[in-house]
Amino acid sequence: MTSQEQRTEPAQVEAVIARLLIAGTLVGVGLLAVGVALMAVRGISPESVAFPPFDPATVAADLAALRPEGFLWAGIVILIATPIARVIGELITFSIRGDRVMAGVALAILGVVALSVVAALALEG
Image (cartoon, rainbow, N blue to C red):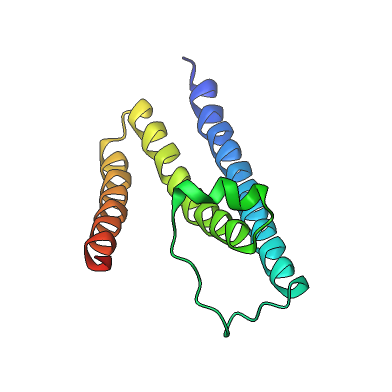
């Protein structure tokens, strides 16, 4: 690989990751907006009803049935997953480039996220 290829490859990867962040944000916010609009159309006040807990098995069915909670949960999941996908992309990029320090930082970030999920699940029960 030439030095020119080494310089452009990270820029190309960063461009792909930037597009992923933009797309994920737009899709996530769009889904949230649809969920809020469906609540408004149906006269559902966020203060008057208990929001259903997250159940990954019901999100697709809720989306197909045009239930607001499906759109809200899908938007939330996408908005949480988008930056995590960026860190995974960076981990792969740093690993390929042989940058062990930054790959370790990315791995540590993913570890903190995983630990947070485990703690949240443990505290929920």
